[in-house]
Image (cartoon, rainbow, N blue to C red; front, side):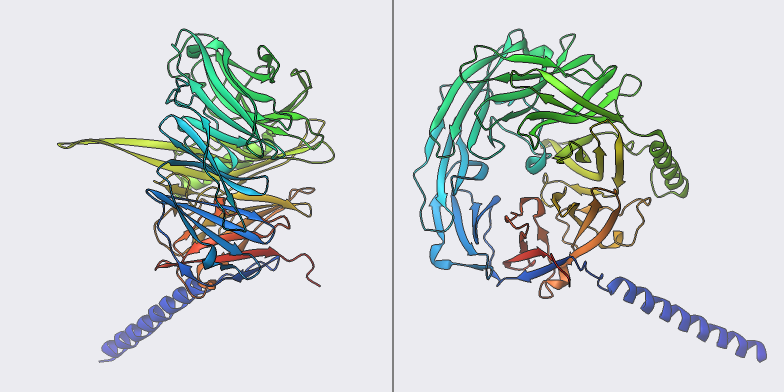
Length: 545
């Protein structure tokens, strides 16, 4: 009898403990994170969601226009950013059968760039008033345009995106705009590109077809840009032997920078020389002195898969390279990261055959400081594909990966001041969408915003992150890594949770398309998972006293 009573008491205690454990665990994960005190947010009124294939935003002062592309039209919505409300009287629906390529602010208007077959158009749309100009044809269908654009680099706003036929890109100060395309040529002939440069009012500055210095089979076109005077720049890897796949991991190559202006007969060529190192990823940008720089990552012959350091080199006015700064990753940091990876593999949280730490690292942004130092922000970014066959044919599925953020600061004396590998693991099947990160610098700190899985909030920087799946309709939260530029100190803070938006279950936050105001405020359009969108303004608290 005593044995039966003791057993009964034990079962009651065990059951009570189990129930308490469940309640405690549920409360733990139901708790909202304590949001950063550095930010406030305000919420606008809900408005009916408009189905679209693509959305762009342009701001001007306290006004914003949202341009949403449908199947055969585009809807123009105009908002006041003071109260985050749409002005319904200024909504427009414009017939449009083209393919959206980009939208940007030029000369105080929003300009839509789109294509129809082999023709490129621009259309000016007022940000504040009810006005949409007639489309302007920029490129005709008589240019013998190649469907393969021929350049591989997309970074920053378009990071990880695919370019079809045309690209539209502003100059560094926004006063010029480039329309770039590739002209069909044979593999044994020099590659040829079409360059058209317009002023901000879309008047033509200059336009021509230009033969590149090397045959297509030897040349991998990479990044491109125009400066504020309308000169065109590009980088390319030149392969020693002709190659159909132009794989930089398997073949010998060198990287060159080209410059050409309106009156120049041919390109000025300069090779980027980094000793025994090879340029793996680099972008063209402008430093604070107004000079053009090429900055990025390099590897060495022993292991081309993983980048080994960062560099930045400056172009003189005549197009030659000078003032090259390069810095290897410190061995002490590499050993520390290797030990952390080994621990994760041993405990089973990371697969032994997972991507290497510095494999597929791509530049997102380069920030130049007044003292000549620079910061490179990047992430591990790649795409995989899988083809399945059935009786109805074959189907290829692409998966887009936006993984760990990597950040580096280098001094003018080629010293690696600090470097970080910050955990993030985003996966999607619809391109970039809600993935990657958005960054800005304010009061000596770098803010790196991204959408993440809630469970990563309390994970240490050396732990493997929980995967965030784009468009899975899970609970979303916006977080940020904040890096002190001077010291390199980094913290991770929650900025916004889905439950803060009027208890709505947010299903979409297109963070990387979010416009930023001149004062640094960030505007988000979010979807409540039902039938409505609403605007959210995230503001930095400048003075907390």
